[in-house]
Length: 284
Image 1 (cartoon, helix red, strand yellow):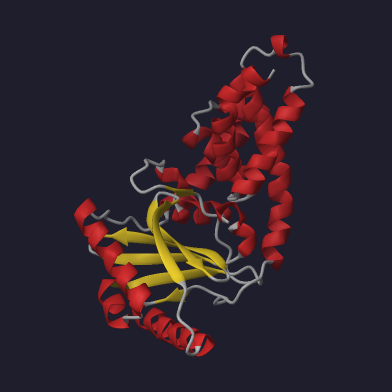
Image 2 (tube, rainbow, N blue to C red):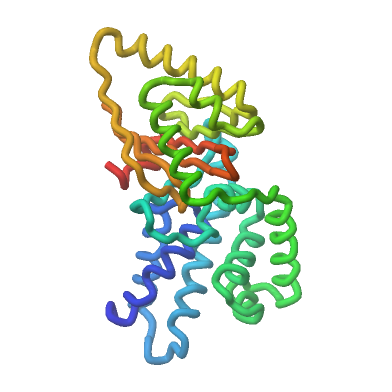
């Protein structure tokens, strides 16, 4: 039973994470799928991966419907739970924070249909069976989802050397409080997102524009200095990848935080900061 399930576990976790934006919830969903798998006559299942994908998709849809209500009462900006991997590890482009935020604007059915077809290569007949909709309806769901995804402004990726230079400069600016360096590496239309979930101090809405982001960091540095007083600062920035983006796990006395940097050309165009401890438990 376990031997037949384990080869599909990673695939199923990836599917659930893309639907829910939460590592913990994805793992819970997959565990539920395993319990259901253990109660079926497995010899009668012709295609186990497709069967399990249907089970996980339906469980995710149920969870997503309640998540829509939770998002409406969520305090401040919502960001997907960070998927942290070592530097250099290859991660699929469809795990990017920007795409996951775009998918959040879709209905649960649109999101599921888009992911199953465009990311996991399911045909429309399988999607129709999974979502309990007609093939025509599933085609329409995917088409609408693609339209949302296409509206995102294309960016030109930085080469490795330029990216590393910007990441190092950001680390220096964050560690030393050098906002002049920060101003040099941010794009004029950069956006700063911060998710505290009402559990830790965070800006309630995204900050748009380099000048406003720099002013925010200046204020944050003053607050940090006032809080610290004469005590030595205890903070460590560990270089990692977050959803495939260069970033840091920030180790502080209050617990870990994450910073992910979206880079295009020779500037940082977005910073995604997560402070909500409920989304960082897997890093503690």
